[in-house]
Image 1: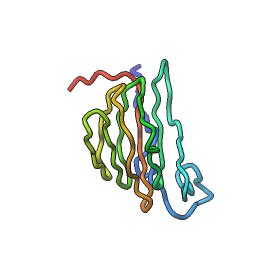
Image 2: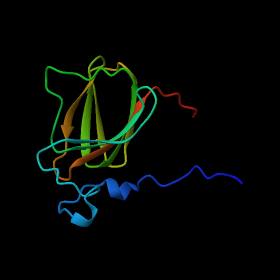
Image 3: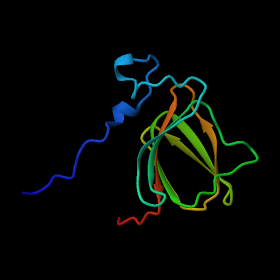
Length: 132
């Protein structure tokens, strides 16, 4: 008998933040006013992790940069964001539906996240080898 390894973890619509909480489904409707939320969706061996991030105007402080030990693939599910890459002094603008790959140790900062609607990211962290 063949095993089916495909199953629905979440629907992208479930990841969008709604302004009004529905107590019957608190996991998908989170009140995010003026706070940034990090939720681990899945994790595995080593530094593999999938997380949902909800930002409401938060940015990386001027004197800090992200310098991660693993690759990161981000998907912007809702809102808009801007990333600044330090070494190339390049800014990347993201909007709903965009994705972006950040190689390990590529120093960057988040310079903008939309407040309305909140900026909802799916971030996959780990060492990646693309086959495309």
